[in-house]
Each structure stands twice: as C-alpha cells, then as structure tokens.
Amino acid sequence: MNHSRTSGRLLCACLCLVATTAVAAEEALATALRRLQARYEDTRTMRATFKQTVTSPTLSGALESTGRVLFEKPNRMRWDYDPPDGQIIVGDGTDLWIFQPDLEQAIRAPLAQAFQSRTPLTFLAGLGRIERDFDASLAGEDDESWELRLVPKGDQSLGKLTLRVRKVDASIAEARITDPLGTTTALGFSDEERNVEIAPERFRFAPPPGVDVVRPPTY
Image 1: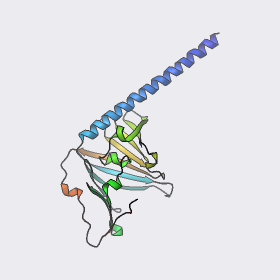
Image 2: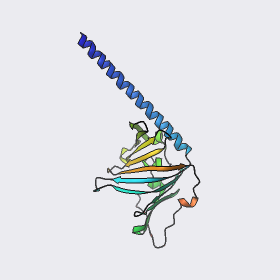
Image 3: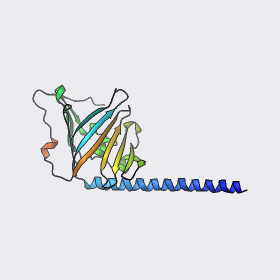
Image 4: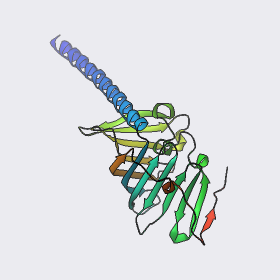
C-alpha cells in the first residue's frame, strides 16, 4: 500500500513538473516573440558587422567569411564581404544584385523572385512577420539568450530559420538558415547600430565596365 501511494505521488509530481515546464516554455516563447517583433517594428535601419559560416554535406569543411551589412526596411540591404571573397550583395527595392568580382559577373534577379513569401530570408530582409509567416518554437534558452526555430508556414520544403536572440535587448546574435538540401548558413552579428542614417546610394548598384550581367532563369 505504501509503495503504491509513493508511486502515485511520484507520478503526480512528474506530471506536474512536465506541465510546469511546458507552461514555462510557452511563456518564454511568447515573451521572446513579442520582444523580437517589437524591436523589429521599431527598427527602420540597421548596420552591423557579420561573420558567415557555411556548412554543407557536399563540402569538405566550413566556409567562413566576414564583412559589413546594411538594412533599410522594407526591402533594401547591402552585404559587403571582406577579401579574399570580396563579393557584394545589394537589394535596391526592386532587384537583387550579386556582384562577384573574381568572375567578372553580376547576377541580377527581381527581388520578388529572390525573396518569395515566407522564405526564411524574408524576415531578415524586412519583408516578413514572424507569427504570420512562420511556425515558431523554442529550441533552447539560457541566461543570456533564447533560441527560436522558425519554419515557413504552408511549405516546410522552403527551409528553416533559427535565431539566437539576446535577452538584454532582443537583438539577433545569430541567424542560421538551413535550406532543403541541408546547407546551413550561420550569420553572427555584432557592433549593431539601429535607426542610423544610411546614404541612399549604398542601396544602389551599377555594374562596373566589362562585367557580365546574368539573369537567373524563371520558373
């Protein structure tokens, strides 16, 4: 009889612990999403330094690069990669340009084609809203940050986005974008400045003389 009562109490305690943990996780997720969305809506422009790490099942090792990034909502951005990469990515509000100096070519694609609705990059580009475009879950939490997993609603084949969000100010410390083929691009951000004036020409791109302009096929 005592053994039965003890087992029952342990089971009840375990169920209570599970329920409490689930509620705490839901509250943490709600808090993280609310603060992240509020910061996102309050940010008109942003500039920062970044470190990019690409891993893939088809690569023998990780590819690392650094540089500076500029954003201006709703759909302007610029990524300047440090040498030896040296490529430049510019979203001018209409087109997305990818300039590859070593290949002497620039890829030009309509922004709407490059950033289709609900793809993981839409949020970073200022084109999406978390709760509207993604199914969110709390992947982890520590004293300094939340880790959020965002999966595009309606079509999980588009990939997923994982964000590490600093608790102190709801800024994004790292974004990891994983495509359907298993390639993961991790972007770490530092030295972030918000709502600063950025010259309009920083979001324009004109191919240098002799550079081939390539348009990707449309589907």
